[in-house]
Image 1: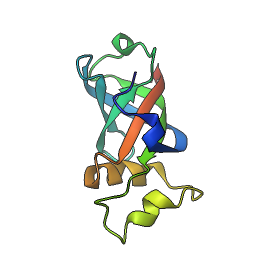
Image 2: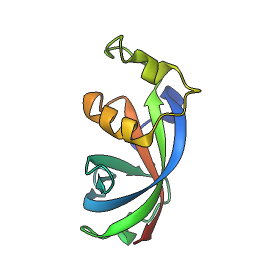
Image 3: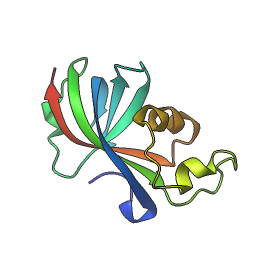
Image 4: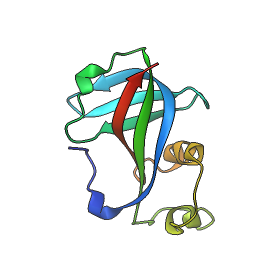
Length: 117
């Protein structure tokens, strides 16, 4: 099960990206991935039942993942709060990856599928 509680999050989108797996840890149930298009790293939390052992470090994959943002926007700069609060806007997935580095506790990426490239 992912490390986040979905009831406190808003589902935003399902996306596909090409990534390179940089590290993985069953202990914290997290995968560190490098987005190949933007060259920005971001964490993935495997969906319940996802076979984490099927991924190899330093290998490239086409992944399918879901993006969630926190319903609690406390601590988010007011000029950036619309990003979290207006849910019907179709945001670019790169925006979520970049925003993760500003507000890491407010964005979660749930890994659903992975195919080797």
